[in-house]
Length: 478
Image 1 (cartoon, rainbow, N blue to C red):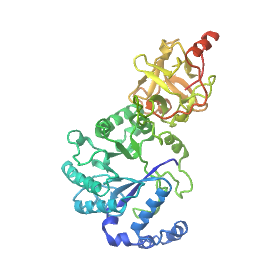
Image 2: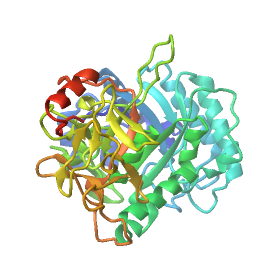
Image 3: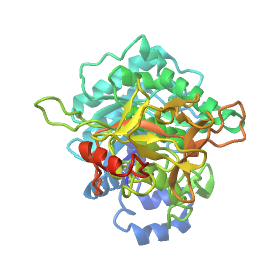
């Protein structure tokens, strides 16, 4: 499926309760009344069914490592069970099942257990603080202690700190940063689901809701990027909006969840996981189009930028389409622009003053040619049809003005032909029964190596081509 890391959950009591940790997988299933499930487990994983739970957990981490998959150890809850509610006794320090000293002991034991395990790259100290007892002062007091405890045992792992209010709010860090003895390995995590924003996604105009959601995201979490800290979106469920902003802000992410179903969830056997990447019986992907959509952001777009005399990559722009996870590209000089893998994109330049979008190293600029007509590339870039501006509250419409009748149009995709066209801009007014996603594009920075196989005309050869063709339009490139 293209993933390189697993956020692997563990309950605190697995590390601190010897009786639980020494229980075998087989007896754990028997204790939960899952007798019928044992045969399937025996058939598929005979090597771990009679291991203790803690050794089985180690075996899973080891197996992931053998398959070149990284692991982040996530202390998800204290008492084994489904997470999370405000009143489950595991929400905050001092709750029924959340003794701070025991928690630090558990972190220390897990850091020790996996010290030297090279595919364990990080430890997330606690998932989703919540409930009526949560407060900022105790968060600082104990999270700093937990971070130092992990670092003292294993200085090689990233230390990942979660937020308050179900991992939605880090805004208190604006005025009071975390104080630690180490640097260079601190990461903050955040969770973001559509339901976290309430009913607006169902009832509101998508562009307006998108704009408000991103404002809240930056105010409560995204600001840590501006402070120079990595941000890890360790659970999310707002895909069309998410992929557009992820590629621009360049934060890391994990998807909840791989599981298609559970042996047991909240007393229900065989519980279907509607957020799961697998279907109920784990036989195939639940939604292959969703996997296609996120495949475009599974490799990082940004990396070290080339500095004079130093190694690194040259930065350029790509035009990304969040709905499909693809980028503008061309197949040949005489074919329309279309969508394809971002590794096959051209390198673009967006001139923020002149509002032009040109292919790097050429005089070709992007131009509108009319309603529901393919966009084209030309070398006369001073007209209104060559000026593109991000508009709408989502900031993901690229709009220009048609020359003939002065109408404003937006970049769009003909999903039947996969051709890039211009159409009337969608959902700009306050109206919720519309879907603007086909017109959402982001011009974003990238240092990816491009894999363009079709050569394009450059500089003087471009001018010669157009002189010979009476400056006719060229429909191609991307």
